[in-house]
Amino acid sequence: MISVLGSGAFGTALAVAFAHSGTNVTLWARSADAARTMMDTRANPRLPGVKLPKTVSVTADFADALTDVVLLAVPMQKLRGLLETHPELTGRTLIACCKGVELGTQLGPVAVIRDVLPEATPAILTGPSFAADIARGLPTALTLAVPDENTGKSLQQRLISPNLRIYRTTDTVGAELGGALKNVIAIACGIAIGAGLGDSARAALMTRGYAEMKRMAQALGAKPDTLSGLSGFGDLTLTCSSDQSRNYSFGLSLGRGDAYDPTVTVEGAATARAALARAKAMHVDMPITQAVVAILDGGLQIRDAMEMLLARPPKEE
Image (cartoon, rainbow, N blue to C red):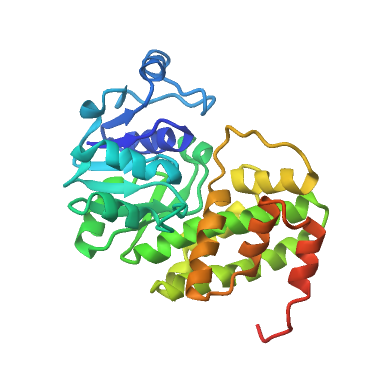
């Protein structure tokens, strides 16, 4: 049995996928009304057309939701608050299912778990995936990063489902940074397409953005190969090319000059600011991230940002 904390679209989708493999899953919702509605209807309004298997139970009682393996499907900027509010999570295996860098500390999900609950076993599940695809049983591959290889092998077996393939690594730094930084590049790509700069500009941003991701990850001790896998290149490709991506869609709105729903979580916006602060402290060059932050803060126009990037000194690729 496993538990998923967070009944948003992604947390619910994971619960459905694991249940289809025969696992009993407890899904925790912050709202008692939401939990009751999901149990009564066997559905989540955020995943239209998806029925909850009988082996998924939904509760708002935190104590009832806890098992030895807990997936944390909450937004990155709310992860610390959840961990600090519930010290009873200590000693358990905690798998972060969020992507980002924390504002203030500039830490990734695994590092935040270690910081708040050092007695817990931290891990992260990340990679190219949309909640709707997972919930509908479409083939999806993810990366599970766990510091201890034996623990990783055990968790890998517990989490694999018929249409969810799990690859493992011990490189938690590379996995969490790949998943976080690709959101920043997705915003940049959305801006380019929304502003009418074309697919060639998007391809350039993806390629040079990938170089930024590798520079930052390697500076923090990640393995280069990790960024070329699912949690880096794979996730970058998906997120920069689909309207299902919140970060890409947010960028599209910026590029078009349209308003964006403020209730929708866009992890890349906070991550861009946190990653840039850390990059500056480490003297890591991240010009696309810098341009995104400047656009978000209103200090740079989109056309000026592109001209700035194009005017950078020529160098070897």
